[in-house]
Image (cartoon, rainbow, N blue to C red):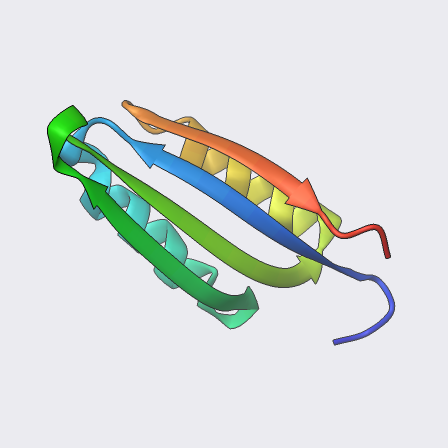
Length: 83
C-alpha cells in the first residue's frame, strides 16, 4: 500500500441477525482492503462481536464504517494507527 493509506480496526457489534447478510455483502465489497477478520459469538446476549483489520485510505475506511453503522442493529467504532 502507498503512503496515503492508514491501518485501522473496525469493531462491530451485531445485535440484529437480519442485518448479517447486508454486513457480509459490504465486507465482500471492501475485501481488497481487509487484512483480517475475527468474529466471536456471544450467545448469552444474542449478539456477535466482529473485528476487521484493514489498510486503506482514510476516506475508504470511514465510508465502510459509516455504511456498516447505518445497518439496523449494527454498532461500529473505528480506531486508527498513529502512523
